[in-house]
Length: 319
Ligand SMILES: NC(=O)c1ccc[n+]([C@@H]2O[C@H](COP(=O)([O-])OP(=O)(O)OC[C@H]3O[C@@H](n4cnc5c(N)ncnc54)[C@H](OP(=O)(O)O)[C@@H]3O)[C@@H](O)[C@H]2O)c1
Image 1: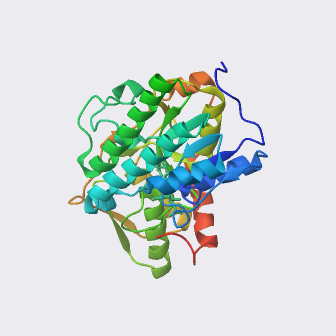
Image 2: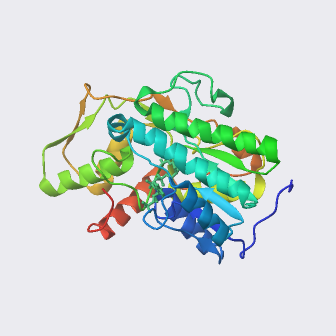
């Protein structure tokens, strides 16, 4: 299976976005697995939208493996408010990273797509073949178009340069280090904060956006980091590969688990005038399962760990 160089503890791995949800999980993961040469810079030290600065950094740091976990990421409201930022920042970040990687002899590159860039009405569970086959969810079109361009660039690099660069399509992730913004965060961190604050204030009901009926495939971020490491060790396909949990739950079930975890005893109400987003997003994970990987952390356990992290970082969490 190894037409590509394998990683050892001394491999120089650049984790772009190492302070974010995914990047920090990757950083923890590789440290725990004995990797000694991890490279990470925050956006204030290296703005990846700057092509010249990115190329200079690659020349100096000489990474052998790059994982692109740097992106402008946000929930429905943030995407709707700043669509052009989601489009152009993400195009620039990934273009600069991939161009610099090719020019500087990076051996392996993992690009992260996302389950939310599949067509809005893709067959469920969503197979990798559904990519590029239909209209996108309009609430995050800019983000999705940028990510699709990144996947196309990885494929083109493989064809033109013969390099073993790959793309993965992670499902919705959550965990320590998430963005707990009530407006710009994803469903799990935003709900953890809302229910926590409602529990403290003893408010009689919490109103959530939408109908509560859409279904989501959620994965604890440390499981995702493990999957990405596994793919770098075992996968060299042209097609992006799905990374999901294999099952989905309704938003209303997620709200119930979170309310129970934080100890909120009031009522949960639904404001059906708010947008629901994609009705269902369950990834088909057959290809990943065939390679021998599956997620380990049950949803309630992952949410409990995330809530414990939130409590321990109540003065510093991102929001
Ligand atoms: N979260 C999910 O559910 C999910 C699901 C599927 C795919 N993904 C993908 O996973 C990747 C990471 O997502 P995430 O949830 O970890 O996002 P995140 O927590 O918001 O982290 C994003 C990281 O990107 C960095 N970044 C943003 N703009 C930058 C710039 N101009 N220059 C340098 N660094 C920049 C940030 O650096 P600083 O902190 O230093 O500013 C931050 O560390 C993204 O590609 C996303 O599409 C995420």
